[in-house]
Image (cartoon, rainbow, N blue to C red):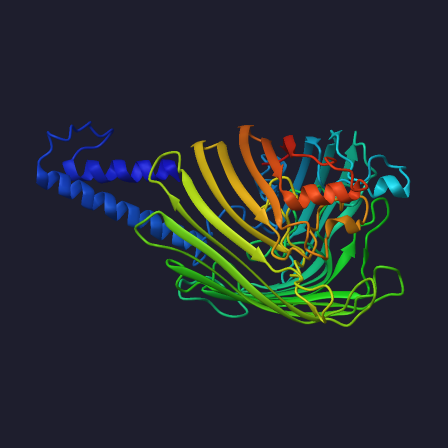
Length: 538
């Protein structure tokens, strides 16, 4: 794109002054006003031509540009069409996508507040205590993809295999990090490329029906995500119907799915008593200014007789996401709001509760006109918590199957019972180098509800909630920085650091978990990581 832009601008100037070859350098004072005006007018025409070319390539679709909300594509971004692998024998094969990727991440976590289990075989008393200390796990994730398209249309299929492992950790293995050799996609598809005609730009409006094992991302990823950062993947079994594609002025996605229970060493199985369903609309006709995504998600779950699984749930959640740009400026914005109602019984007692919860996020940012593309943004996110543990309502926001990364770099915060403002700076000194840094503050939306990830990994723990509200509501603040660099083709690196300073609630619950011994808490935690990704074809 940069090369094309340079060539077009060069031709424009040459056409105006009547020569070919490389354009001469002009000093601002040497060119008369008329020539300057002609050059500027032609530059504007060239920019319009470039914009028209982008519109032809992307159709109506415009990326939101907000932090951490760009969806992982389908097929996955590490895959390519076989004729683009550089292997001569495959140069005519355009109907098969292939991919192979390996990611290794070293983590250094000092006083991780998620941990409540100091040793893999600790007894019940030790499990209840905050663990603290240093952990240095090494996480390995290997993925391979194969997808058939076009040659047998309307029939298509895809399979994706992932192997997730963890080494060198103090703690017992869990399914956040470990899921050995698992199919995370295995589906058949009926694809009719122009079943619904064409839009005003001439883009086909296809119909797609998929059935099988699926993983994908929608909207801003906070409620439906593959969870790319985590070592394991959110995977579903069921049906996905798509009317239209991202390039169209409108499209609609329908979902009816069962989440899979990630079994660390065995084949994942659908959670039979649980279904997720939804309809997600996309209106892009006015995408130069605004994109609208009205949607609806539902969660239905039947109770079992197992302890801690007595919750019959039927949650209905209408919502709206909208994002847009102010033309001619560097401003953009992104918002999402959801209300939840229905039935959500207590999982421990089975007590009948009425769901009454809501959540929203809003981000506004400005990108400066500079080669480094610096962008500064401010974001606020809120998800309600249960206000009264003794009434007949559940006000805790259901976070469905999103991911935590936009909320906190250390994975401490998720979209439930949270009130969180944040500022962030992003810039790109080189095409293959991106840097971002941010500062965030965190409060409980309700001081009587839980802080989900406190002491929660490896062991369910009641100390992440104070039903009296006397532990306070301030969780803490964090500062983080991340550097992403691609030194060579097929190689990408990701290095980051996050420092979290604990607040009153976290410190008070640490003390409670350690037998109410005064001073038994951590003032801060540190998280450092180095990640290396190798891609066979891209």
